[in-house]
Image 1 (tube, helix red, strand yellow):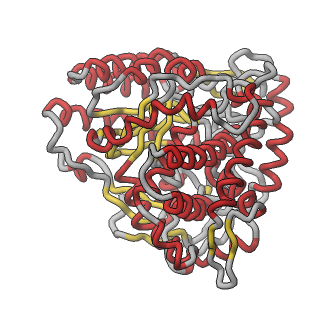
Image 2: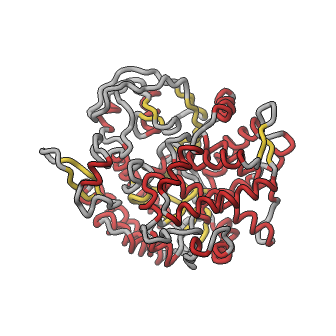
Image 3: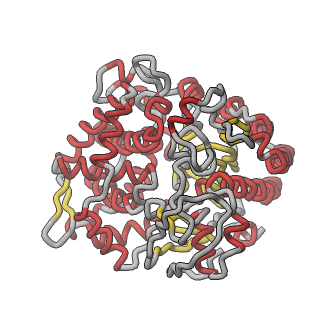
Length: 540
């Protein structure tokens, strides 16, 4: 891992061979630098029992296997790429991005000869077209757990994850079974046992239900093919990742009360009844964790700081979802990134409203808000995810952002939440600037751009002559409500064309905003964080 507390990457461009086919056009961009802040992932392990400390190295080893699988899904030729790079800084930059495309610069190639990243990553043949995919007759082609490949005659076929990754997932499943053997918490033991089986069969629902039933666990291992952000062709294919987590029981107790208000908040959403007829699962919970290891998808480019799972629509409707706030990672981003951004871009008189509790709250309620709204279209088009295809992730993230703000407003008005509305709204705006820097290559970045442009149009904030932003708190509340209605309607209608238009019109960074973001880079404010992590860092 990186050794310096702050690492400045100077990209030296040179030709490099790559065995993955690429378009002939050389699209490499001459980046000057991208700056990350290096953070040690640690927590207080003294409260853990001996058997839990024995489980952590096994969990980390299983997580490292997920890292290997994600490399294949993202790029496909890790070893040949890295072995051809002699510049150690460039090699580190490739490792951060899991390939030669900059995830914080819209997936632009930073190595000549590579070409642009295929929309379908390595889940599909690099030269596949949407027309070819639509004409392909195979019931498993839309499965979350299959690759699409060509045979020797160029014909498409599917191959399950369990077959293409048989050796790796067998090793991972064995490690997870060893963890289950050590576990004394009944819920954790059951989940780990079922999750190991799921890796071998590509059948994850039973383990998702078991994960939802865990209530008293001190450790957690989120592992497997989970999110579909990497598949930008259709958002069908899920990518492998892992988190090793230690529960903060004191903070979790503080958060526990908020899940009980979900049904009332669902009922009050600012849309017609048909768009809020689904009821959030009653067994959802909300917890705070310290994350001690990231691997795979969640570790690529911008780092995840909160989890809302499972994604299975049936599990969500029956049980709800678990929202895990990664407190130590959130604190690192608050201290090293959000505060410096606010000092540069928020007017001085409103900076006093930037607080960690409010920032934590906006992230927490974003995750809770994933459980609100609608998962299935109202006219029989199937799930929202399938109806909106490659735009589904960006719109879902946008929904969670604005409904999270809606929840905060409602809870403050009812006295269920501590703090001032000004603190949450100001921290929310600073958070937009933080996430917009992730660019158009990220579903979260697109969602933030849509919201920023929509709020600006509705005068939720104004840009002053000196390039700082001042919030109109009343207009921000109104804009949040109207954008919530728009997004929920698009989702409920399964309106692909309307969503596509919104992404094209509002999912862009204007020259004015880009100028302000450039100032942050000029001030050497990190875009995101990278980790020193592992058993040595933990002292195990």
